Image (spheres, rainbow, N blue to C red):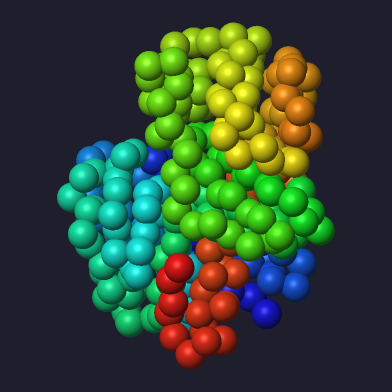
Amino acid sequence: MNVFGVDIGGSGIKGAPVDLARGDLAEPRHKVLTPHPAAPEGVADGVAEVVSHFGWSGPIGVTFPGVVTGSTIQTAANVDKSWIGVDAAALLADRLGGVPVTVLNDADAAGVAEVQFGAGRDRKGLVAVLTFGTGIGSALFTGGRLVPNTELGHLELHGHEAEKRASTKAKEDKDLSWEEWAHRVQKYLAHLEMLFSPELFVIGGGVSRKADKFLPLIHGIRAEVVPAQLQNNAGIVGAAMAAAAAAQDGGPAQR
């Protein structure tokens, strides 16, 4: 069965039909730039553009870079603050012509996909899936079950918000070398390890495609540290999984 997934990020909105039997994209993804400011109506237009590229008319799962409860946005660190308090599922369903829409946190979506189909599969201990991009997203799993909306990129690290120092955007903005950036990521992982003692860190986001450039430079972490197998498609796959689960339950649902 194919279900459509959309991943809203601070820099891009990407989506594709997903083959849920394989846990992979059924067609090459389509991407548009996230508008700036990334306000609700503009982002909704971007989602609609991605969906219309495929002529899709069925259920859709959508990720959002912030805390989502019910289908209401609670935080918006890397998009416009006017998202806070918006019923994202209702907004997007209206913009997409009334199709069922399920909305969930972006890192949670990526984590669900990695635990089901990727690097976290069959791991029973505590698994931390981290997505590095405009910010740092996090998804924690214990016994394969998600603890939603953890948002661990906002932890304070050496007097700064962690994602302001160790995200991919921070690397680009400060023109850090791979070694310099890996040192910051190492400090962040050590802090998470002190707090949660995971058995596995899965490093996702677009930078996971270049894992060979930085993972060998990370030292002193007890947990296994591996790149996401689904790389930057994990959010799309997880969004589609959420939409399929909601349809099976009888309607759009949200953690």
